[in-house]
Length: 82
Image (tube, rainbow, N blue to C red):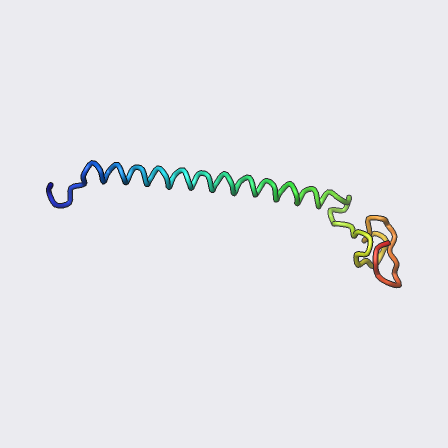
């Protein structure tokens, strides 16, 4: 074998390793896309919980007016949604 020449076995090993890298990278990209879609869906569902695009507070959450609460009722003395 001449110096600098690759053997057939070495070429096969390189092709197998390259193939594995491509498969792993493709799997990671698909997984990231699925996660991104789920995050986007969750964000949309949260933003659609009220007409104004903001999230209204549940019972016991901090509020300053009734508009801050899902129930529409804010106890201004305690500053919590009823």
